[in-house]
Image (cartoon, rainbow, N blue to C red; front, side, top):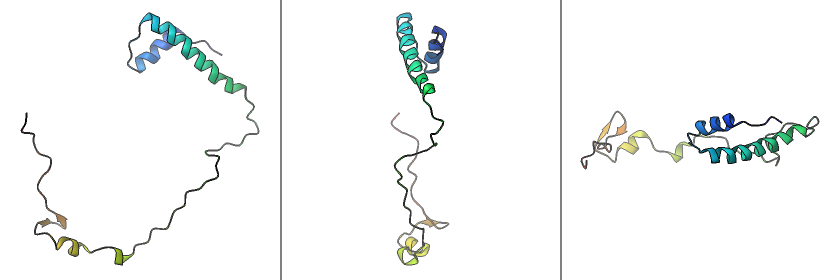
Length: 103
């Protein structure tokens, strides 16, 4: 397994936007090296006869077909009949996003 360098740890820290001291650098170098070596042990596992899978439970999603049932909905005219303010088939309401006045 390849050994991590201080430069590798500094690079990871910069990607995470972390500033680390020299003491932390030594600590993280040892810890990250152990993690990389542990994960590297997976290369030793024989997977030649293992079939790729995305899940192992055998469960499947159950979906119902989408069906439009006209008795369940209302027409646009029926919905808009309860308001006096509409525009192009939409409800017309007061603006809710306005300039803040408490600044």
